Image 1 (cartoon, rainbow, N blue to C red):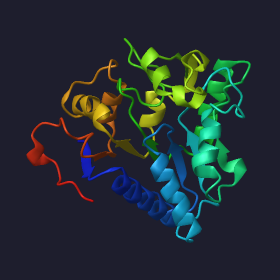
Image 2 (image 1 turned 180 degrees about the horizontal axis):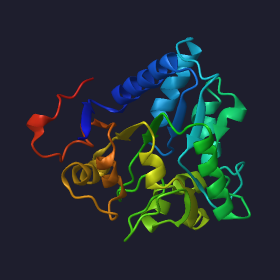
Image 3 (image 1 turned 180 degrees about the vertical axis):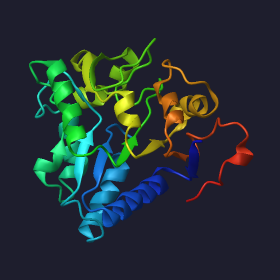
Length: 254
């Protein structure tokens, strides 16, 4: 069963989830984290930077694997997710560079790169805590709605809506947004020991309602989170607005 936490706004969500990560690192300093990009986790990453500056969180033994990366651009590209993560998280905390893992969007052989990434996750014993967002079309990572989903890390053609959602990373010019990406597959994500989905804003409300109340379908990749034994949806009030039977939802916390 999906657990649902509703918080008043993005700031409350960021503070709670930063505390979750900090507590998890205190319990297991060598925690393996799966991390998302996009607008939703930015405030969380900045909050983690604040906690680190206060000596309240230590990333020195942690290890990270990011969910996805654009294909066809190098890690140094201003629009890459590697650059995004350096800006919003890694430059703000004490992550050891050799413990940060990314898919290489400039790899000459995409399929070999995907196999390498899967092997790297397996070699460390899997992901302990996987944070994910959700796209406005229900995608998780870059697992786009389709007739069938790839289970493991794979190359994917991006939907137009997904490319539009990332246009700010490419100077507002849609034609500069890559048409392909590399992404963890849904099976890879579901093999994490714990999954937490973060969603904020009214644009996510319809997908959240379908995830909670709808059927399992590759047309809504996020619906496969229903299969996980330890998954929590952490939402602000806007993202939770369309959930039915609101009496079953916890009161929003600030």
